[in-house]
Structures are given as structure tokens and as C-alpha cells.
Amino acid sequence: TPTSGAVAPATVAQLVHISPSEAVLQSMYESAGRLNLGPEVVDLLRTSWREVRAQLPVRMDDRKLRIFEGYRVQHNGARGPYKGGVRFHPLADLDEVRALAMLMTYKCALMELPFGGAKGGVDCAPHELSAAELERVARTWLAKTEIVLGPERDIPAPDVGSGPQTMGWMMDEWGRMNGYAPAIVTGKPMVLHGSAGRAEATGRGVALALNDASHRAGVDPVGARVVIQGFGNVGSWAAILSAEALGCRIVGVANVDGAIHGPDGIDPRALKGLLEEGGRIGQMPGATEIEPDELFTLDCEVFVPAALGGVLTAERAERLPCRLVVEGANGPTTPEADRILARRGVLVVPDVLASAGGVIVSYLEWVQNLQHLQWEEADINGRLTMTMGSALHAVLNRADSRGLTMREAAYEIAIRRVIAAAAARGHLDASDIPG
Ligand code: NAD
Image (cartoon, rainbow, N blue to C red):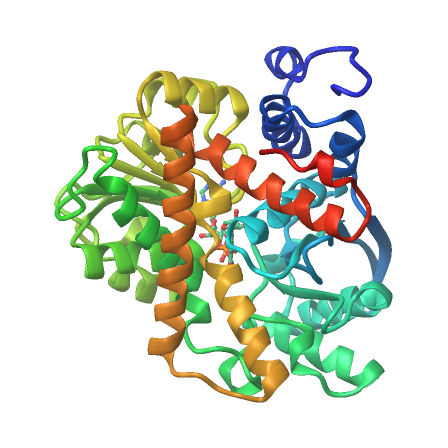
């Protein structure tokens, strides 16, 4: 790390496989260097405020006991209560959750939401569990992390492998322990005071970012060929809204079961319906099944990673034929791939900007819950569009005026806001705030 001064992070990245947290730290270190941050400021941003790692003993349907591992990492709360999703995935571990928590700090700061950054995880494979088992896992995670949560302290939300139902169970478990408080989680079902527009929010934000950045990348969204990796909450809505609202043509889609190519356009609503009815992606009419790796070589103008992190590797970045990458997923591009894409002139709208739609509407859900109000979807979508639009504008302005990539500009803006809040609290000096 720069504070130890032993090895420059960029050198490490070239030598070894980089972990999720190292990848986020690298962007932070590079910004810290440009912004001339002092070592104690870098230390504050490099480390987490608090990391909970808990044993989750869960009784399976066959009465056997399984021990899962659960996490909640609170990275930085200078700007407000901690906020971030809970990932249910067999590979979820402390390092990944830590990386995702850091991203949340910067995402919330960039969007000017009054939240700090956190993330949670459980190392379980949700598709291998029954609904009853999944419910017990969700309730146990909540019970084991409850001590650091709270409607004005730390507010979980869905991420990969979790969804509105998971949030319903968690809200109920919190209620059993502390009394009814819908603002304890966001991304809840509508009947439990979820927000209109929350399900589509991250995908809607991806489509907004795609539209706003396309002109800069020399791409006309109408008829633009879009390839999407991941067809869950984020990918499916990003596909549907880019096709229906912007006129894009979805020519390639992948999920964990496989990948398809449809040069004449894949109907994303029909694909969503097929998958919801239990069909496989390879059964989609009008599309051909391809090898998952081929997805990264399909002719397209826009590539949207909307699955897991680290998928855009250096090797894939060299071949990626698009002109615009819109990061719906968190951390999909490795630092080396990022440099390659920049060198090749591929515009990358970074995760902290492109995938912020979910947390924006989560914030709106939280505000509604605290006031016991229910807003119309049109109001929600209007606020989402405004918030994303002004963040995008700020990022492009800084990128242009300082000759930065959009990721570099986004990190600089976000880091500056976090430091300003920490200084106002008296944790840092006013002289620590960069220009
Ligand atoms: P999800 O569980 O709803 O969907 C994940 C999708 O990725 C599924 O279609 C799955 O099949 C696919 N997938 C998994 N492994 C794959 C692989 N190896 N190859 C291809 N596809 C694969 O999750 P989500 O909520 O849509 O989250 C997707 C990404 O977006 C994550 O990186 C998440 O952190 C990020 N994100 C989510 C939200 C949100 O509101 N849900 C907000 C911001 C960012």
C-alpha cells in the first residue's frame, strides 16, 4: 500500500491476480495521488469502520445443521447511516464484501445521498436451498448482524442472490427483535412499504447512463447493438428499458446457465418471461446459443456487464468490440482492463455512477418509510433521472476539465465529499480537503 511504501499497487496488479478489494483500492490510491491526500487520509479510506463476520448456524429441511458464514462491512459513515446490499453467493467472502462496501461509500457520495457505504454477504448458493431454508438463512443473517444495524444506523438492501422476499423476511426478523420499522431495509415488496420503481431502478439507471454517455462515445442509442452479461434484477431491466425506452437492439445476453446471440434483436421482455416460467436461456426463440466466452467478442456498440465482478479482464478488454461499456455490475472491470479500454478509446461509465439507480431509489424508499408516505412511480422516476443526470454532468465536467477517465473523475468527486464530511465532524482537518 502507499502508506507502507513497499510495492506500488499497479505493480502488484500486473504480477498477481487482483482481489476485489485491491481493485477498488487501486482506484482510490490513484485518486489519492492526484489529489495529494496525506497518508492518514488514505489510511482512513483504506480501512473499514467495522467488519462483522458471523457464524450462521441454519437447520436444513433434512434437520441437518449447516454453518454458513455471514458478513456486514461498514466502510465509511462520515456522510450518514451505512447503506448497502446483502449478497447471497457461494463465493461471497470478506474481501469481496469489503470491496463492495467501499464502492457503496463512493456511490452514495457521488449521488449526494446522505449515506455511508456498507455491504453484507452470506456464502450460500440460494438456488440450491428451499424457500424455507433461504428464509432461515436470511433471518439468521439479520439476527447475527442486528447489533450493528438500524433504520438510522445501517440499512441493508438486495444484491446478487437476494431480492424483495429476502428483505421482507429481514424486516420481519428485525421487527420481532426491535419492533416494527419498515425503514430497516429497502428493496422490500410493495405490500411491505417497498417503493414504486425500486425493482427496475438499477436497470433504469443503467439505461439513463447509456443514453447520456452514448453521444460522447459516438453511438446513436436508437438501433445501437447492446450485449448484456447477467439477466437478473439489473440486467433484465437494463435490457428492457434500453430496448423499449431508447430503441436499442439487444443482440447478446448471458446468465449463469449460458449465453445467446440474436443479431436481429432479442426481445428482453419475452426472455424475462421465459426465465420466470423456468425456461433456460438457450431455449429463447430467435437466438442461437453460444459459448459464454463468445459474449465478449460479439459485434456491438455497447457492452453492459450486469453479473459479477472482475469479468472484464485484460485479455477480454483487448478484444471487446464495443465503443461504450456501462457498468451495471459492481466492480466488473479489472484495473488493467480499465487502462486497456481507455487506451483503445472505449468509454467506460463506471459502476459508482452507472449502477447507482438502485441506491437512489432505496434512499427514496427509506425517506417514504420514515415519513409513512407512498409516492407515485412518476415522482420516483423523475427524482432518479435528476439525481443520475446531475452526477453524470459533474463527472463529465471534471473528466473534461482535468483530462481524466469517467472513473477517475467519479472517484475524485466522491472522495472529496467523504473527506469534507469527515473534516466537518472533526475527524480530519479542513486542510485535508482536496481542491
Ligand atoms: P441477480 O442475482 O438478480 O442477477 C445476477 C445475474 O447474473 C443472473 O442472471 C445470473 O444468472 C447472472 N450470472 C451469475 N454468474 C454469471 C456468470 N458467471 N456468467 C454470466 N452471468 C452470470 O443480481 P443483480 O441484483 O441483478 O446484481 C447484478 C450485479 O449488479 C451485481 O454486481 C450487483 O452487485 C450489481 N448491483 C445490483 C444492484 C441491485 O439493486 N440489485 C444495484 C447496484 C449494483
